[in-house]
Amino acid sequence: MKNPLDSLGQTVTLGVVLTIIVVLLIHAIA
Amino acid sequence: MELVDFAWWNLCFRWLHVLSGIMWIGHLYYFNFTQTPTVPKIPAELRPAIPRFIMPEALWWFRWGAMSTIVFGLLLALMNGYLGQAIILGIGSHNAHVTNIGFGMWFGTIMWFNVWFIIWPKQQRVLGMVEATDDEKKRAARVAGLTSRVNTLLSVPMVYCMTGVHFY
Figure 1 (spheres, chains in turn red, orange):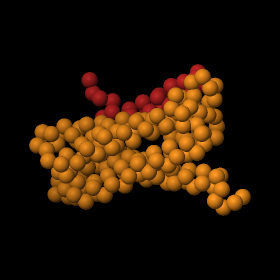
Figure 2 (figure 1 turned 90 degrees about the vertical axis):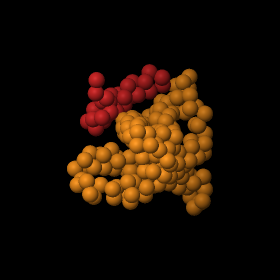
Figure 3 (figure 1 turned 45 degrees about the vertical axis):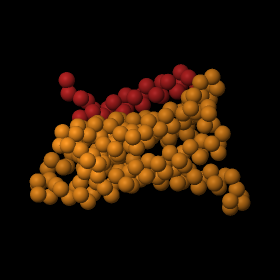
Figure 4 (figure 1 turned 120 degrees about the vertical axis):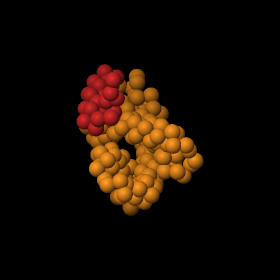
């Protein structure tokens, strides 16, 4: 399987997904 | 307002933190969005200019930008009294501001660690500043490249948290 980090587009998409997870976590914790 | 009171030092350190952060992440984005995709298109006879002239200079500003960013960031957190709470992500404090900045600080710290303890040592092998065989150089380039991509990924939520300080 190709590493998603080899693609700049997939790297940024994963960054956005992680951001959404963080937003949810901030609301869950606080 | 006194020129050199607490609020002014707070502003001054925030300003230096952001300036350093631009220097750091600006170079990170240059490596990932400009240099890496463009190198294969450069004629072979011109390519050695990148490791010989551009990389050593760019890596200097990149890693010291990272160092300066974390130093001023930690000073800011200390001055404003939330360092300890932010490290534990504000768990139990019901304070979204501290949880938000805590996440940002953790992402930034992981990225700083990656710069100083993975990317820079590996790049020293790639650039011939530290002795390495051709195989070791190839492996070092792959690890440095992937770690740089991890930092690009982490920069997205990190910048969200840093710019979210006035929202939460």
